[in-house]
Image (cartoon, rainbow, N blue to C red; front, side, top):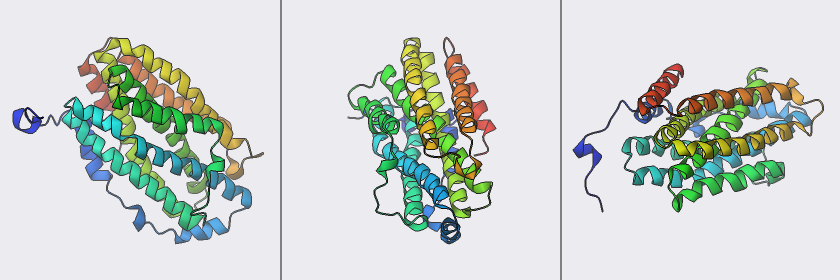
Amino acid sequence: MHDGFVTTRRGLDRSLPPMRLFEKAKRFGVWNPSLLDFAPDRAHWLALSDIERDVILRLTALFVAGEEAVTLDLLPLIRTVAREGRLEEEMFLTTFLWEEAKHTDFFERFVREVTDHGGRDLSHYHTDTYRALFYQALPTALNRLDIDTSPEAQVVASVTYNMVVEGVLAETGYHAFFTMLQRNNIFPATVEGVQKLKQDESRHIAYGVYLISRLVAEHPNVWDAAEDAMNTLFPLALGVINEIFMPYDPAPFGLEIDDFIGFAASQFQKRFARIAAARGGTLEAVTQATDAAIDAEDS
């Protein structure tokens, strides 16, 4: 039973970072994958070599399953934040589920309409390392929140989802799509869709770093759990990136593995530094750091 409501007790605190991100989601997150015209992309697909098609299909098979996975596994985090009465955070988190579902829609459309592999089993592209992260670690961390809503469990869930799955693998995947497609002026609808996805995910990651930092500032004892999750999962993410390149020598489109490993490490380290700064810090300092990161993002 409810004993009152935020909106009639104190009103929404629109200065909180999640509310600022909610405003951005309302401005930039309303796009429809079904309106993208994949006809030029299909023509470009047919002009590719077999190895070029294979690397794009491999990357897409990882993305579409990953987007489905977070769509399936996200609800426990939303429920946890709602039970704590953090309405501003819950309001922003409602956009996560909508956006992850749209991302699933986008990549499934790409598979079906561009590659003509719709309905075919692409799970052979899912390596043991990928499965360890998306089939096991992600659902385990998120669904743990249904029985354990402790700050430690929340930190592990957000590190897994926001910092590693989104902040390392998804962002490195966008970098790969842009390198292959945008640099070669092909697949215009796919590039447009990936740009929209990247905007969405940047908001998700900003919230995840805020959530982890807030929990570390409020509960200093959770730092060990956060650091342990990072140390365990980051090598898995690097393993997934390495395995994308393993079948190819040389890699198509001029892809260089060192470029992507370096990119992934850079994305991870800058978020790690912000979270580490929250140790012994204040919620005000966490909010200021998040506000600065939000201001630095165009969308």
